[in-house]
Structure formats: structure tokens, C-alpha cells
Image (cartoon, rainbow, N blue to C red; front, top):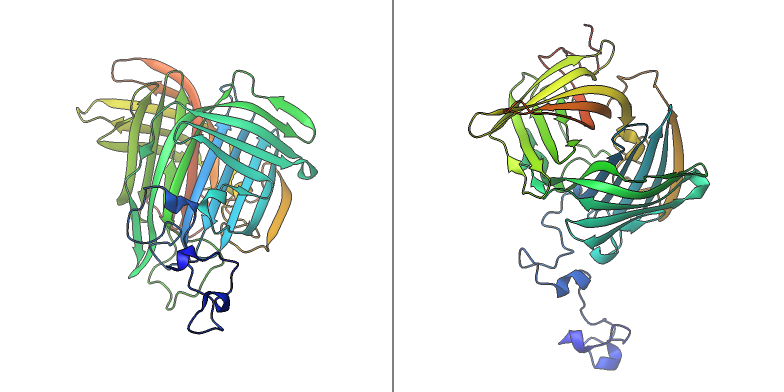
Amino acid sequence: RTARIPWNHSSRSQGSPAGNLLPYRSAMITSFDDYPLHPGSRPINETSTADLNHYDRYFFNGYPAGGGLYFAAAMGLYPNRQVMDAAFCVVRGQRQTSVFSSGRAPSDPMAATAVGAIEVIIDEPLRRLRLTVDAAEHGLRAELTYVARSGAIEEPHFFQRAGTRVVFDYTRLTQFGHWTGWIELDGERIDLGDGAWGSRDRSWGIRPVGEPAPTGAPGRSAPQFFWLWAPVSFDGMATHFDVNEYGDGRRWHETGALAVDGEEPRMMRTVDYRVTWAPGTRWAEAFEYDLVDWNDEVHTVTLQPGEPFHMLGIGYGHPRFGHGVWNGELTTAGERLDLPVADPCSRSNLHIQAQCAATYRGPDGSVRHGRGILEQIVVGPHPSGFTGIFDPFEG
């Protein structure tokens, strides 16, 4: 019963049969193991796979109903890489300002919601969370509180292979909420006043993270990934849409949901969309999606894509602070990006969330106006207008 032996005692003093050996103790038992939440027979801190791409992360965004400000945050834990990182970004005017923190992952999940200048505080799971940022030397501080407007929308499980190798195998929830608090940008305090709309997601499982690893023989086809994700907020309700499609247009993942305040989100039977690409980019110039209910009623959301938020501002595809990349025991750094960028089809600039004015038209003829985002990453061919890997839309 080695658990009775204090960890700072030597095995020799406890009469070990091999005096030069320390008594066995688990490196995996943590404070989370004191809660009845185990999905299997192993400790909570022991991942279900040795895959280096195992991850567990948060994403948040926020935007006042009238526009003029956009903020986003991300935090990820990569236990098999022993890395943790986070980022916070504000888009205001013609500039995107970011702070990144990265370090060694803690062994205890109870400590895995803070790294460097950024912390996520879970006051009430799935209902109330706080986000703090303290990086005045990089022009950013914040004290923000997120209160859920909707229940969690569990998107269908993501699973994708490249040949026999698993590339995606993860779960994600999306949730709508309301932000209060303040942001300090370059010494100027921005009070959210009556608050801001926003959404968040949580995802965990396997997807490519960290430094690229050798994968053996090259693939039989060119790289391809088509992803559209559009959580949109309105007074009293919100709508959610996403699709993944192959290069020939076949769909392998989709989500549609209608979330009325105070009610559980209602999942749709299917979704559809119409897109017009902006010449010289792989970004939408106009976009509309349909949420098709189980009784075949159609809820239509029309988006007017505006200013882009470049996702590298919170680590997605960042050349230094990419998700899960080792940057030392603890590193915090800032970055500024002037907008618009010169090359919208470069690998780093391609992935965006466009800030959008939105109009909802219900099957009963009702109309609502709101705001949200259209996340877009279009790599490789797609029948809507692309043939190469990063070629721009020609019109």
C-alpha cells in the first residue's frame, strides 16, 4: 500500500526490498481523479491515445451588436506534447493586436486553464466563465465575463482519414453567450457597457497540432480542406451552421441549429448554402444559409461579410505560435497586424472569420437583424470556383 508512504520519504527508510529504488507512485493521479467522472479504467490525466495530436481547447469570440470591435481568444492543452498555449486578439479599426502565451503543460488538469498572461476561469460549467488577460507590455489587458444564452450544441463527431491514418477524431460543442466587462487596448479602456454578443466552442480529440511530423509516402491527391462555420446572434435567438466538403463537393460533415433564448437548441434536419466568392481571394463576398427543420420548414440567414479577423491572431497557422508548438518553459509575446493584408491567399492569411451583419427570415415571415461571423478556410479544389491549392477566385 505505497499510497500510505509520504512522497518525500525514501524507499530505504521504508524497508524496500531494493534499497536503491523509490517506492512506486503514479505520475498520472491528479486532483480530477477525486471526482466521479472517469469514462474508463485509467486516470483522467492519461489520454486515450498516444497520438501527439491529441488536444483539448477553448475558443471564444465577442462583438458589440453595432460592430466596431471584435475580440477572440483561444486556449489549448496538448498533453502528449506536454505543451499548453493561449492567445487573445482584438480587431479595432485597421489593426489586429494579439498576445500569445505558451509554456510547459501542468500535470494536473485543475491548473490547465491558465498560462502566462491569459486565464480562463470556470465559475459555473456551461453557464458562466471569465477570461482575464494581463499583458500591458504588449498593449492588452481584459476582464471579461461570459454568460451563456443557449445550451451547448454538440456538433456531429468529426472523423477523417488520410489513407489509413486518422487526421481528425474529435468532438466539439458550440454555445452562444453574452459578454460584459472591459478591454484595455494600448492604454485605452473599452467598456462593453450593456454587453456584447458572442459565441464559444470547446473541442477535444485528435487533429493536426504542433510541429509537423513525417507521415511517410506523400498523399495521392493535393491538399484539400473546405470549412464554413457561422454562429450568428440575434435579439432573443441565435442560429448555427457549419459544413465540411471534399474537393468534389461531397459533404462529410454538417450542423444546423436554432437556439432560442431560454430554450434548448433545436437541431435541424439538414443545411444548405449559397456563396459568392470575392475575386482575388478565397473569402466570401456574399453568403446565405438555410436551416431545414424536420418538418421541411426553412430558416434562412443572409450574411454580409465585412472586415476579416485573421485566425493566426490566436495561433491558427501562426509561423511561431501555432497550436501545440514548443516555445520554451514560458513565453509571452505580442504581435500587430495591419489590415487589410497584401496577400489574402497566403497560407498564413487564408483562414479568417469575417465579421458579418446578418438578416434572419423565418418560415412564418418574421425578420430579425443581428450580427455574427463566417469562418472560412478553403484549401485545394472545390466546385464553387477553385482548382489549385491556394489559387484565388477569378470571377
